[in-house]
Length: 323
Image (cartoon, rainbow, N blue to C red; front, side, top):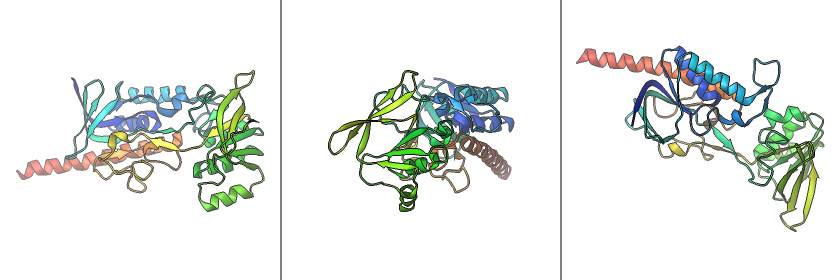
């Protein structure tokens, strides 16, 4: 077992982790990023990215994450290809973590950037057609379906918000819900029902996503949850909107989470209830869930970490002087 020590330990990568690393390295904190099971985060399974600032043309998600990683390494970040399986946050700084390699990671500050994963239906064709008509983020990919026929699958706040958003691009939006009533806030339901561009399809589940001759999504195979009757719906794009699951299992019982499992931070900051422990990106953000907002909170975490370390070092000097 090898022990790796650093002033700033970052668990998780993606826009939040890499941005925290870039700012942390430039501040002289020599960060370590433990990449986790999906280095680069959700953008590594995203194809076209058109809404990240700074690029005139469409870019590829994996390429963007590769560039962020290289930038972080260039300014002094150490990348570790490991997955954290245990953390010790008791007793305050320094904080310890154990990887599945058996190595130990020790940091004076800890930035948690483990992200969140979209929940999927788990039916045939869903993963195969990811980026080819099937998506889990309307605000990310809706632009590519201008003037086309799209469907949203789900019945909660997320699904209704996605359907309403898609009407900015499409005049033909179908909301597919397995029940005969929505589970969203009343104001959202009123907006959806009043929108002539949206057609609710009740008591239906998607059984299969089917590709056309061009390899992209062509139609959905549906089944009625009441009668069992099967049907098809031709669409150009389908958005699975049944929620997200934040990657916070590692911190259960150690950090406070909300009802959906997201880490709770001090409003307007990335600070958790434990001084020196910060959360950035989708692991603490259930509202925006965008690459650019994740990067922003990663920056915030690094800046607050720098301030925390400066205050910690001052207090340690004062303690030594008082002895």
